[in-house]
Image (cartoon, rainbow, N blue to C red; front, side, top):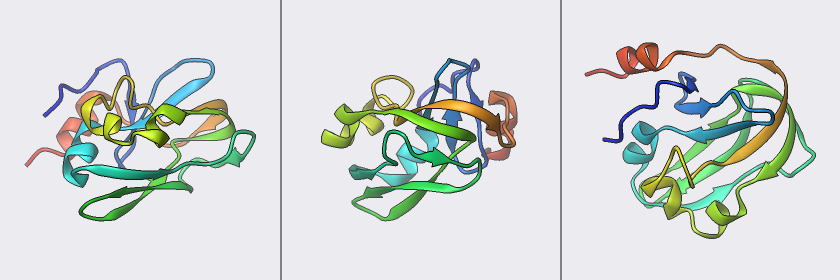
Length: 123
């Protein structure tokens, strides 16, 4: 399992968020490992208004289709086209090249620290 970066914030639905402006959103290594080989990403359009806690896309793997939830409210300013073109990058580098979208944040939903996320997912 990939080491959980401590500088990021996490959601109970396994998304991560950084403090950038715009903020970057991705899924955790735990989620990527659980999904298996990711084969398709459906992400919101640039310019789309999204809401914290709402479904904003889908992640399809060889095992299942999972919903992508937004940890923040705001406007999508960029999507990771490289990850859309080659979704396996989300498996190989979930906290780096496998980021999913960048958002101009107006508010955040409930977020966890790395320790809180780890504790929630232990076992």
